[in-house]
Length: 164
Image (cartoon, rainbow, N blue to C red; front, side, top):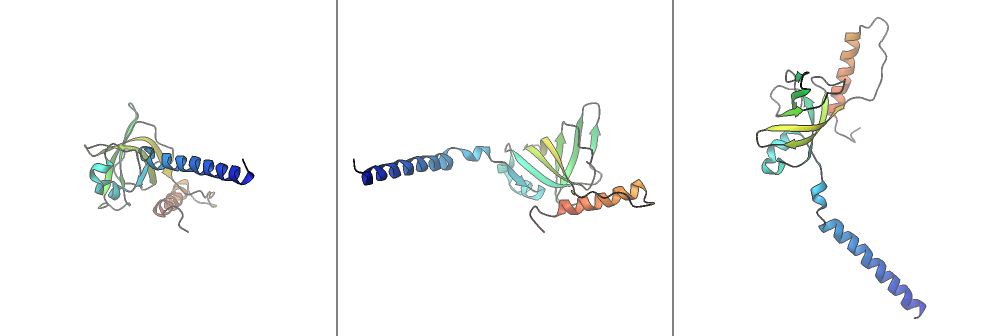
């Protein structure tokens, strides 16, 4: 076998291996492993496609919607597009203890499934907060300091990822 023929055979083998890998990725049910990231309005508008799929639901905890059952560690709340009362929202049920920073009007991302009863069952709850630390100013009460942190977290939650 001449060196030219050997090189052609190696190139052909490499192309076949690459083609087989690409075909596996394209047709190998990789879509079953996808996790959708939706806002509450997107989740509600997708109808049957939203049921039983693993979804990351992102939004703001709607004011007045938090119900925490400490005895059963059951947390129920509504995730809305924004903090306005008329915003579209989704009822969320979580069986885990919420993060310490969890509160009304804070950005959250919950991962889980949506059922036909209109309840999003979460197996993972993440709080979207600002990564900036600011020590309290001289004479500032802890309540004032928390409010300024909450304002920063709400702004961070309203800003889409990758935005300046």
